[in-house]
Length: 117
Image 1 (cartoon, rainbow, N blue to C red):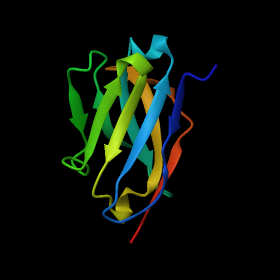
Image 2: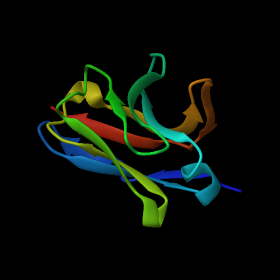
Image 3: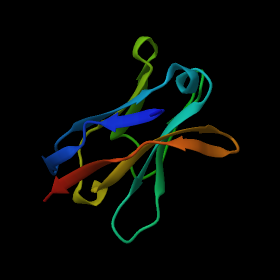
Image 4: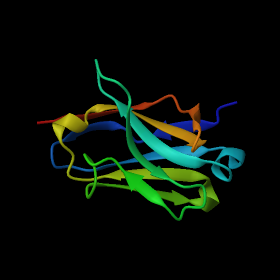
């Protein structure tokens, strides 16, 4: 059973925008904080953004503040990552994850985002 499924990645020019989607099972969506991480080739996976399970709180990595926005649609059990003013250094595989203060228990398969200069 697929608990988290990302979509929306692709190739975009620097300065452009993309919106990633993460469709979650209802069980996951209603119980866990939902986050986005990314991993570029040869680097460690890094935190991008997170939204609390209640949807009241969001947090962003300094590198994406003011450019990326995490949001959700409760009716669709889906979390989004709107990415604006993309830079070549945003190129990575982006992962959706679900968890809590103890860490992240569930991960999606990842979606590739490539930003050309």
